Image (cartoon, rainbow, N blue to C red; front, side, top):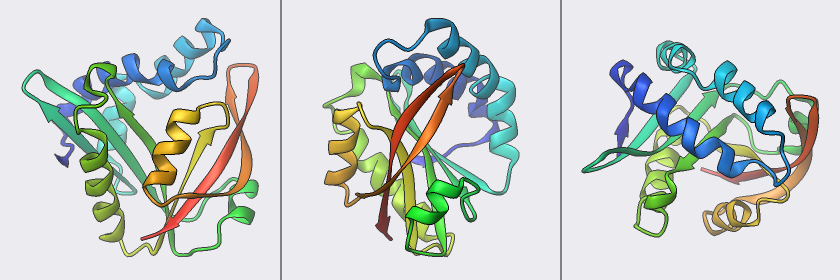
Amino acid sequence: MRQAISADAAGLAALAEVTFPLACPPGSAPEAIAEFIATHLSVERFTEYLADPRRLLTVAEEETGLCGYTMLITGDPSDNDVAAAIGIRPTIELSKVYVLPGSHGRGVAAPLMLATLDAAHGTGAVGIWLGVNQRNARAVRFYEKNGFIIVGEKTFSLGPELHSDFVMERAL
């Protein structure tokens, strides 16, 4: 595990293109998923994310290249539902946690999460929160296993669709 660098932008975008659809609820419109990827997970956007001092990206690598990544965003949440739900401050958002399907069950996700929690703690935050689709039971179980608890709900827009997310939080 290591902190991402600017040279990782293309690899992160390729990784996001494969992994983001896996986290989308069943029945999500393919065109909405493609639009989200083009708008938020492109090489250009990752270049911006990597240059943004409010964001910390951690990557996992195997011999074939990048196989997972996380993104932390410092600062208080701007979403009113999230702000009302979380109780530990100062906080940091765990915005993205993705591992390639071929790396599932190979011991990548747990060390990636541990490295991310260490990076979050290093920012001075004492709490960390995330949003996860309520229908993504596998992800919810993973977060619970890593000490997160459900503290509220929020919505997530994917194209014209509104999805229900759990807000989960834990102390650092």
